[in-house]
Image 1: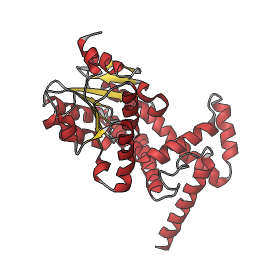
Image 2 (image 1 turned 180 degrees about the vertical axis):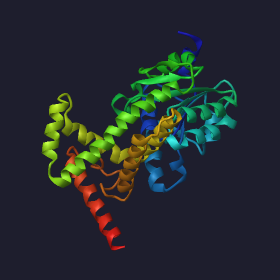
Image 3 (image 1 turned 135 degrees about the vertical axis):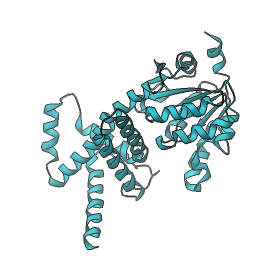
Image 4 (image 1 turned 90 degrees about the vertical axis):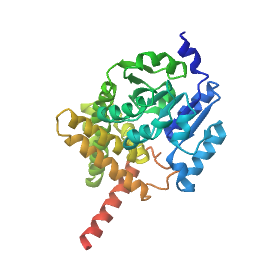
Amino acid sequence: MDELTQRARSWRIGLIGYGEVGRIVAEDLRALGLQHLQAWDSKLAGQAALAQPLREHAGAHGVRLVVGAAELARESDLVISAVTASQAVAVAAECSPALRSGSWFVDFNSASPGAKSQAAAAVEASGARYVEAAVMTSVPPYRSKVPMLLGGPHALDFAPAIQALGFAGARFGDRRLGIVSATKMCRSVMIKGLEAMVIESFSAARAYGVEDAVLASLAETFPGIDWEKQGAYFFQRVIEHGRRRSEEMREVARTVDEAGLHPWSAAGTAERHAWMADLAEQGVFGRRGALGFARSTDWRVEADRLLQAARQARDIADKD
């Protein structure tokens, strides 16, 4: 075990973004016995109703909440950035002046290679070391062991250290900055696109009363997929995380555009996810935070809700 790996468990670790991913990471690091954990989330400076669950979680798990990204960066040996895609570059820039030379900044955010390069430039200007981490699938089932690819000139050296912190699924990807993020972004064209297509297809089929025939046809064509179960899961994830997914898909569209292709699919997927996020914020699927929110095992329940909301919106537009 090298010196860096030995030191990793004594690091002061700062979490920027204390949403679902940040809280899971905090729980798992505490379970390993790490003592020096701190976090910052923009929600902490906003409405009390949004901040209170974060404060309660931090109190329950021994995580110190700080007053801003700069304070967190100043007091951390390792900063883990897990914010929304649109904030990835801004957070790196905000941290940059306060980062200590030689510290580590790991970027978990789903952003384009171009955005990662901008974030890296901001971090490296302080003398800190930037590592991009492309998280390759949904975090909750795997928790900190989620498969991820590490990229950038410091990634190979950092891989054993993050593995020692419980990230067993982390592995070195490429020394070139942006390559592992491109891998994640191109995958998201398919995965997030499939979520959007399922929601659109299943809901339209429900409106016409042909959902059983559509599902039967899909089962015949793709017999390895339980479309009922997969459909429910897709609805759940997009209802709960549509805003974050829409921002990621805009980064995906940027990635496709940077490759020289017009991102028709990615852009359309971003719009569908954003639309679902809007409905969720309007309370169409129930109260966020309630026990049953985004947990229905029958996608038809959620499809009926969104169809009713869509009809009401159309009726209002027709009257205008």
